[in-house]
Image 1 (cartoon, one colour):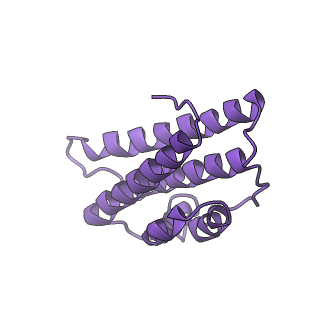
Image 2 (cartoon, rainbow, N blue to C red):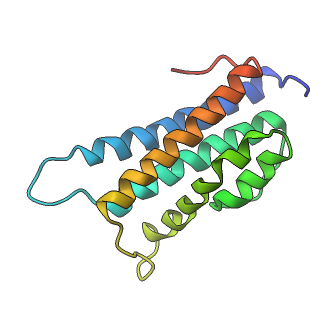
Length: 143
């Protein structure tokens, strides 16, 4: 695989930073201590966004012009054309549902605390796998 130029690497890092912000927000929301429960559908949404942005960062690195989609299955399939690890992340496909629940009234199915925790767990799994892959490719990752 050809090593991308600095502009592409900068773009990759921007996707990663944005994904990290989504995961940080989702994790922070779960620590909310108040009269009401955290908005679990928003926690799950931001976990989905983290996974989506990490997969897109890898695709940017690979020079793949991916479609405008929030579908984790499609993104994993595109990644699988350039790596073997996406098969290990098939359970992350569950996150796709959360890309809709927080955006559209009438599509906002209830998300439970355990589902929100699972969404964060899946996002962390995607994040770790993509970071490992990019490190192996020699990318200097943001903390």
